[in-house]
Length: 184
Image (tube, rainbow, N blue to C red; front, side):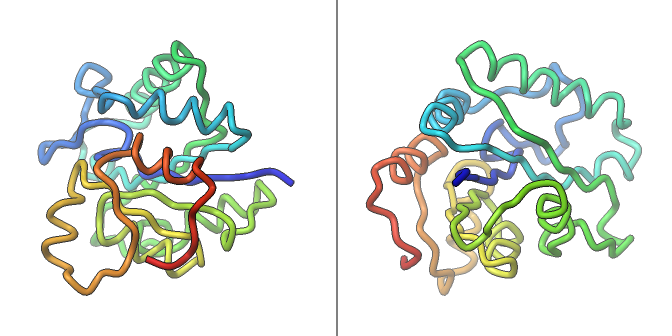
């Protein structure tokens, strides 16, 4: 049986910016995140990325530039022995009220159309409330990382009952330790 894990991008794999990541030059991996993905790959996990990218609809960058950013992610990840199975993104503005923008589950439905993923056995790691909401909506096991918007998410949502870790590397260590449960 294949094992899957789903990651948010900005604030989890790479540093986030209130000004948006608008070019490959602005994309910088959070220390340890690429190595953590490679560890997941070596442990047999197929890794997906799901990411809201409203900067496309806002005219801050185009789809070609987004592809170049993802090529940089893929290239740097390959340098440490890792890979991403597939990247799903929502290019829409929040006002468009599309079905794919998190916290709506459209990108997760796209994953299930292409891959035999059982969300009940799948961790979803993100840094925002919408990440935790979509994980719970589709039945994934949510994990919050405190990088990116994670600290703010935890402070602003004291009733949020999810496991949380300092960063992706610590979350992956937890997952690979085999001691995980669905409970917080």
